Length: 472
Ligand code: HEM
Image (cartoon, rainbow, N blue to C red; front, side, top):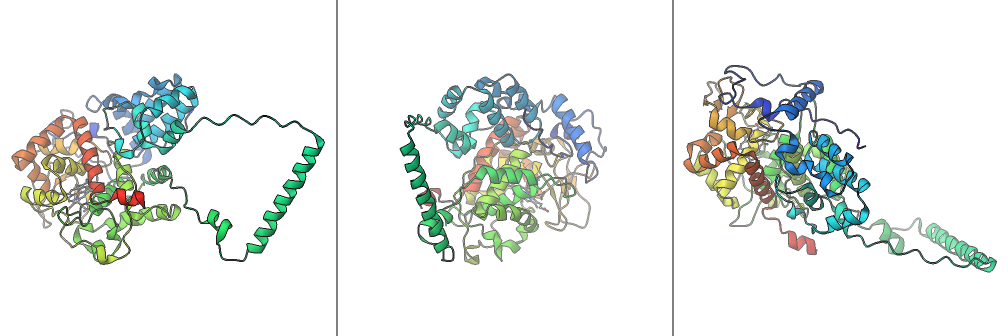
């Protein structure tokens, strides 16, 4: 069977962390957020309990029907069991891969091949979460599936040559001439600069295996001792800040270029704390030197959302790294947290987003926390900061937020003082048009996931000239 996957050390699932007012089990004033640095053991228990019993969230497979569909593609009876077990664990990408492997092992090749080849490959064709069967989603995510589906059947083996002694002798003679030739050529050229026929092989483009990069990102996400046990949130923020500098009018900024590597962009106030995110991706960059920073950062953000239980984000490679700081964007393109709805519309409108997309994107504040030494704000938005969910919207709608009394910047707190909202977060319920969308997302997580996947995928591609690079 498939090897057991490591469990994400979730501190608290969204099901256990419902907003104060809404939850009859959680009276006001109860400190819901566990102490930092929760052990893996505690987290595993809470994850299992929530997945098995939560009426709010349902099991992973009931929330996302495609997660339990594996068996319908012709796999053996063990394939669905493996799939649903895995659905309770890591992100869907890993699940999809394992399910795919299980299916390949179990299904008759002809049937599997026909099923997969029915869907053309394009990462942007990735179906929205919760809407399609796993079978339909696998080909959209993994090039290996496409290769499997599209591979021509192997040619029939050549008819065996009649064996006679003179043929064998001739073969031996030709073989030793060939080996001798290659050997002396290699000796002769061993001290020469690489060029010509031998060098062509050595310097050929490495195989760009993005799935291997994605797996490496998945492997490094869970980290005991860092914030709430995951690098996921800070990687989502890196991908967003690398992309959110886009200006539609001048077609400048955006993820293409990875200009946050350079001063002054890396020193812009909004990017405080993102050196950590860039630093933790360095070992992956060293392992896969062919991937550009711009692709790596955006892939890391998309992978993190998925791994923390969110939707699959459509992502495709093709970004380049600009060579120097001359392409850095001016300071002030990212939003300021101390402003209201008009500022949100200015900043996100400049990138080309509408009201609905703005609300969906800011819903990423279900994840992570504020840090006094980065933004000056403190605390997380939800009690499940390593689970992607619609909890941020529920908190916004249902919690009685009040101004925090302290010497820091203006922020809002819940009655426990453990959770927070920024002024820009509150603007989403103070503005009538935004509030309508907040309410909708608070009541329907599936719609939020679908809208977030589309908006975040769009954000990561702003200003990226994919066609030009594909042709180059
Ligand atoms: C009005 C728009 C936004 C404002 C003003 C804003 C502001 C902030 C601030 C002040 C922090 C705290 C940083 C720190 O102290 O570490 C933060 C964190 C975060 N933001 Fe936003 N943000 C906005 C939109 C977004 C969007 C669109 C996304 C993603 C799609 C996003 C994702 C995150 C995440 C995941 C974190 C947590 C990072 C961590 O835990 O290290 N934010 N944001």
